[in-house]
Structures are given as C-alpha cells and as structure tokens.
Length: 325
Image (cartoon, rainbow, N blue to C red; front, side, top):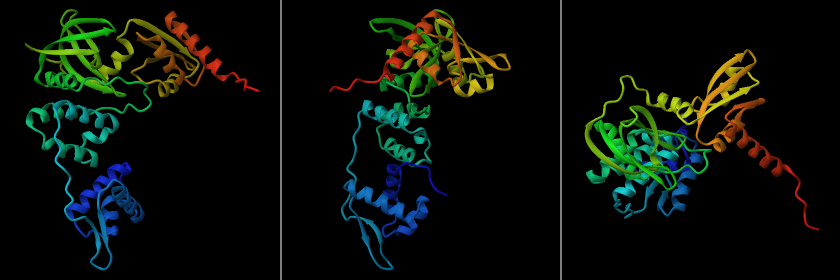
C-alpha cells in the first residue's frame, strides 16, 4: 500500500531506514516505503542533494549505507523556538500530531530530547492538533508562548486574566474561564466564558497580548464539543446580522458554504436563506463568492456595500489593458 506523504517526509523516513539497516537494498526500501524502486532511488538522490552522504555498494551483499562518521549534530532549542517549530509543523501538516506519521514521529523524537521546561509547553500545543491554512490569505500566527499558556490553562481548568487587543490601538483587560483552544483554517481561537458578561466568547489567540493564570477554577460545560461550538460561534457570534437569499436548494448551498460561515434554511424547494453574523463585511463578501448560484443580500447594508465594492473591483480587473504603442 502506497503511503500518502510528501517527498521530504519520504526522504526523512528513508534516511532512518538506511541508518537502522546498513546495506538495505533499493527493493527493500521501496517495500518499506510503499513506493516503486524508482521512487526510492529518487529519495536517495534527494538526501544526497541535501548533503547526506548516502553510499551504494554493488553485488549480492550490497545496498545503501550512510557514509562513515556521519552524525546529525545536536540541536538546542529555546522555548520560543521549540513552540514555534511545533506550531509551524502542525499548521503545514495536520498529521504531524500523529506519532504514526513520519513527520509526526520526527517531531516526537525532537520533543523527547528537549528539556522538560521546553517540552511541556510544546507538547501541550501539539496535543490540540490543527487544521491547514491552505487557501487562507494572511492568516495571523499567535505568539507561541501565548498559545502554550492558554492550552495549559485549559488543561489545568484555571481562570485567566488576559490583555486582549480588540482592534489596533484598543486593548483591554478581561477575565475568562478558558475551555478550549481550537484551530480552524490556520486561525487559533480561545473558546471561553467571560466573567464580566457571564456569556460564552470566542477570542482570537493572535490578539492576546498577555496571559495571567488565576487561582479560580474554570470548569467547561458538560458535553462541550469545541469544534461544533466554534462553528456555531463563527457563524453567529458577531455584531452585524447577515441574511442572504440564494436561488438554489438548501442541500446544494450547504456544499458551497461551511457551517462556520452561515446556517442554511430552505425558503422553498428551490431557494435558501443564509443566516449568520459578521464583524468584517469585506471579508464576508469575498467568502460569499463561493456561491455558484444567484444570491441577494437582505442585510446588513455594510455587507451589500462591500459586495458592490468587490464587484466593481472585479469588473475593473476584467477590462482590457491598453498596450503602449
């Protein structure tokens, strides 16, 4: 069975196989990797291009070996570097949280040799897993220390005081019960209960400037499903109510628009109403372009204006360019 992995991951796994089994043949490497012999040889070439001295011996007892005296130099990470590495690997490869995955296995080995003070926060971040940021523009990355502190606060079930930036230049202090850190499309969110409002809130981790652990206990609701709660809040937890009518059946619209963007309600067998909220009409107008059928914005007027601006921008982009004579 072929492995679904990147060429880089395959080359790393091949290096481990050659180090553990000096003299291993291309046929055995191909079998262990689940690829053709030709693909295995390409992985050998990849390692050689990276400066790893893989040697080959011909004959019935020949095979691949790592050059004599080759050793991977020891690695030393600061806490920030280790947390940044874990977050970057997770964001680029979901299976990196899985120790059975080649990249996940390599990440685990690195973490096992880190000092406890560094490995603890890194392991907490790794444990939550994440979703890929593919196709998402300008996704802000949270500070690694902040993300680790919030994940650990959730695990300890302790309340926290946060310095939170709602908008550029606007920062406030708030106390919350942290329930879960959830990642969706590369964005990091804190699902929590606000002490001041006694209500569920969804905060952007990249906007958290400081985390102060409190002595107060913080218990999440029974049966909390963080992923489902995130979807619900992303669609309905913001300031501007959204209503959009789409000329297509609800089951079809649901394939174009994720639950985190809007709730689909059938108006009749051929039309659907989208209900949601947003604080960023420009962003929401771009997301609605995923609809493959005519639609009309009922509310809010800010979204209608953002859609007109986007349409004018697209029309200008489609106009022919006058080439200089």
